Structure formats: C-alpha cells, structure tokens
Length: 166
Image 1 (cartoon, rainbow, N blue to C red):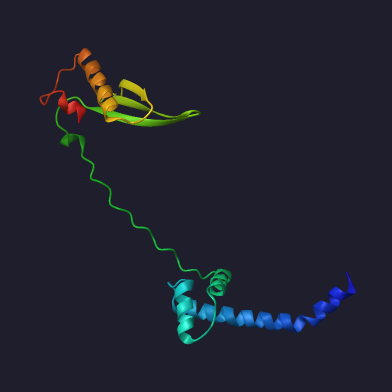
Image 2: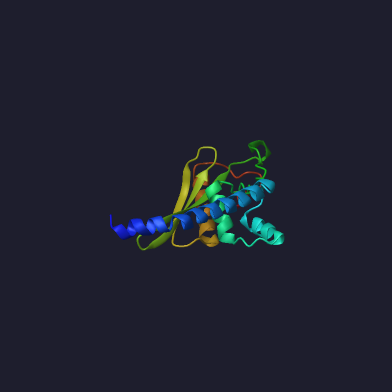
C-alpha cells in the first residue's frame, strides 16, 4: 500500500470521527422525532424540524429513516364493495345464453373472438372472429346462436327471443 494513502488516512481520522459523530447525532434526532410521530413520513418530519429551527434536509431525513428502518407503514388501499350477484333463482324462466369477447394478440395486430355459450350446458353455440369490437357483430353472433338453439328444438321463452339478446 502506498505511504501517502496511510498518511492521508491517519491525518483524516479526526475528520472522519467528527463526521461519524455528527451523523450519529443526526440519526438520533431523526429517530426521536420518528418515534414521537410514528405515522409521519419524512416530509412531515422535515416540517417539524423546520418549525424547531433545525436545518436538516429532506434527503438526509429520508436516508436516516431508511438506515434506521423507521419508515411509516404505507396506507392501506380501500376496495369498493363488489356488486351484488343475483342467484339463479332470481333469473327469469327460459333458456339462457352468455356472450364472451376474448382478445388475441397476433404478429400483425389483434383480433377478438365472440363466443356465445349455452349457460346450462356450457356448449359453444356460435363464434365469430373480428378485428375490432362491434355491437353490430355481437348482435349477429347472438342471433346466430339463437338460430342454433331453435334448430335444436328449444322453444322461445315467454318473453320471446328478445330476452336472449339482452
């Protein structure tokens, strides 16, 4: 090891010790303030120090909180209550179909597939591949599925075929 490095290390020992003591004093101040205000983040602690007349920067407070592992817990996100799901007993009488649109990513873009399922048997009655979602194409797919059900001999329910399209 070069001599000048050892010499410089010995000459800077007092400066290093003073810097370490200053850092320890700063960390102790931040620790005491964080324990007095356990839910405050570094910005509120900065405002507290500023009100006391101490000049400690935001970055120094944030680093000290990280070193001391005293970050306040993150606020919990609240969830919206889920929608009420109707039970099958609440559904009107008659055959039910369900439409589903599934997105597929292709090398040249995206496409969508409409599937119309028979709810009781989960059989696919009709399907259609389209480039973009369209109410008109969804209605045509539903009409095709209703035609398949009629061809299988399922009669119209009391509300007519319009019930299937809703």
